[in-house]
Amino acid sequence: MSTLTREATLDDELAQWCLTGTERTFPYPALLAHLRTVGKHFLEPALLERLAACRTRRLPAEDGTNGTDGMSGFLSRFLDVVLDKYDDRYDYPSYTALELLRRPPSGDWRKLRHRRDRLVLLLLADLVDFERKALEGHPEDPAEMLPDARVLDKRRRLAVRVMEPPALRVLAPGTVDPGAVAATPGRTCPGALADAVRSTLTGDERLLLSASLQPVYVLHDEYLFLRVLQSFEATFTFMSGALAFAVRQLHGEEPGEAAPAVAAVADVLKESLPLFSLLATMQPESFRIFRQFTDGASAIQSEGYKTFESLCSTPLRARLDSAAFTSVPRVRAAVLEGRETVQGTWHDVAASGWLKEADATAVRAAATQLESVHQRWKQTHYRLAVRMIGERTGTGSTDGVPYLEAVIANRLFPSLVRETTAA
Ligand code: HEM
Image: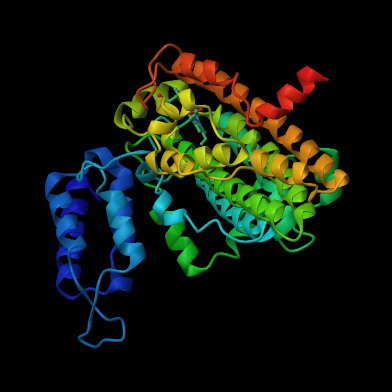
């Protein structure tokens, strides 16, 4: 079908939906198929106007009565993501469709890790499947500038490397061989693992996966970029929730529960590091092209990352007043209102005698581990940025690589550095 015919058919479907559609009959597949063929940046003005009109609609109740429901959370958030550029609200959260993927990060760290594990598995299984279709000669959109088969295959294997640890925790025993993973990570068959994950998908999850992939342009590699960013975001959400849990435990009846939570944060961040190797398979030339249309969206606006950072210890005033935190005003406000941190609470509780020596040692060990993994995270991120953008400025209005080089000196737990220096 030509772009013009598809556009006309989509417009008919939307016009019809505006008259009689319900929440469930919204033409997601047709709209997403079109969006992925032209790129969100290039959606036609008439289509955008039509979608904006759809968004203002009051919907009939799903039970067929005349009662009008406002538009449901999901559909309205979905349309907000599609229309972010039209609304002049385009930023990193809307580019990565975080409002569709986000769940409140409260509760026990084990529950939060389970949720993160499942979401990362879904996102990466979807990527593995997308690359399989390209490898088999039937690429789906976005399909321009396809990498060669060797790169596509490597991509699938690197995705598996990140999937194995969560798969061992949340999939049925036997799906992944723990002995083989311990001996040589990344050897599980990508297709079999992706199929195992995809066989557990609910209808809502299928919609979620499809709705959350809205590239700005038509290049194949942007799919990878979005899924990697989203996998990191799911990880930061877990990290923030688990550190908030640790702070509560330090104050509460069971301060010894804090150390396992901080240790889990360090472990999960470490398991996520190969996401950078996966992203390094992106072709710098592709990135250079589609990046023209992502200006204004930068992970410097990641609330998940800055929440995690500011739950470790309170950032210095200079950092709080720099683009690092002025780009995330809600997180900055929470810090200025006195957000409690793991470092602050652990020192207070240790000084009051509430924390046993063994528990204090365990928290210190977990924090040291987290610091070291985070240093690796920043160094790897820096090297990737050098490779992908060289001397170009960042899309978050910093000077780019020099900014990333400078933040490597920051520490999550400055008191650990002081202790080491004093010893
Ligand atoms: C092509 C790969 C990447 C490049 C070229 C890149 C580049 C940059 C640049 C230049 C900045 C500085 C802010 C700006 O002006 O935009 C930045 C910040 C940041 N990036 Fe990336 N990035 C890449 C991938 C990622 C990924 C996969 C993540 C994971 C979510 C990520 C997370 C962050 C975070 C959290 C910051 C803020 C760091 C801080 O303020 O200390 N980046 N990135």
